[in-house]
Length: 171
Image (tube, rainbow, N blue to C red; front, side, top):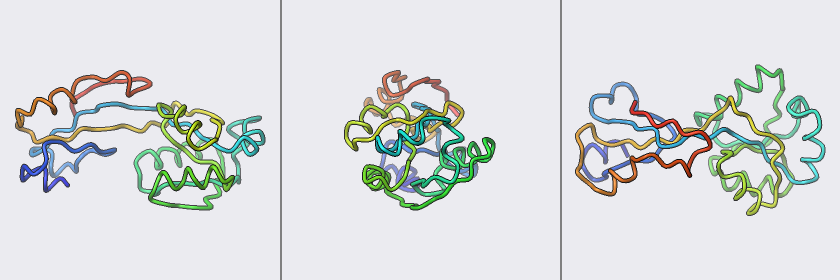
């Protein structure tokens, strides 16, 4: 998609990662929002995991999206720091499917705190804990030279409603 952006087929790309350093001169990444990560489970599993959190997560079934997602790497490091041995029972590249598995009680899963109300409502799960040290960040990647597109300009403005602790910066 970066190639399409560079060829002016796209005006903006929303992503959870910054472009590689080799593309730094061609593109500009603007942090739009950042959210801590929360962990979710069915009410039954949550009742077992909430007491003693986070140590209660040790060896419990964990559902994860792709292990190369930026926030998943941070989460894995957090688990290691907390000396929590994870038991990955499913790794799926579809975050909605992970939530469906979570709703079925197959394990606990992670999602951005900013969408926790929606996750709980839609998937009938509960938040078992939030992890402020682990964050998911949303970037808007544009060409280094402005496209002049008014919609892109409006999108690049701070959106506090998208963030639980927004820090807007150009990277």
